[in-house]
Amino acid sequence: MAADIDSTGSRRDAFDPFAMPDLFEGVRTKRIFAFCIDAIAVAILTCVAAVLVFILGIFTLGLAWFFYAFLAQGVAILYTAFTLGGPNSATPGMRAMGLEMRLWYGGRPYPLLAVMHLLLFWFSVALLTPFVLLVSLFTDRKRLLHDLILGTVVMNSAALQTRGLSGT
Image (cartoon, rainbow, N blue to C red; front, side):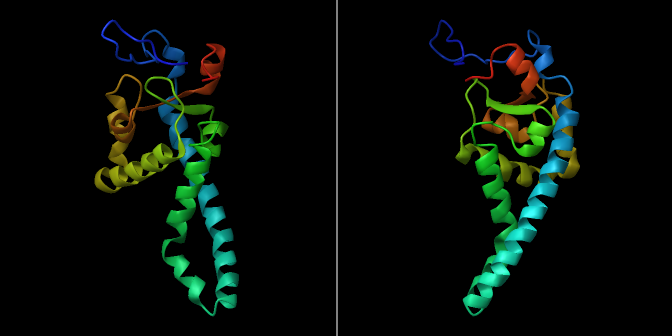
């Protein structure tokens, strides 16, 4: 679904929180639980990757062990790029909680945007600690700071499907 074009020729927001409140019900709480699920998944994948790097390090006489310096970050970036930037527009944690991410005009996120979303999230958490969630209390679509910067919206996927907006 492309966003509607107004009389000036520019795009309008595709998801109005006042006209479609069901898209944003409980999103804040679901995002917190989705983050916890994804953090556990990344931790498990990092442990598996650490074993593989260890074995590879034996065959490369220790050279591959330098990957340990950025292994967790690399796993998290790949995890986000392939899941959030993939065809489902959601990480496994987001899918488990019934969430989906879209761009403000209705398009799906792409892998580079998903990685930028992850990096901005971690920078905002590093600067604002958990207070980063307070931003969602003052936005109409329960968006966080990094959502506002990148122009993304997280919504209930069931409500998107009910409205026929999931096939974009």
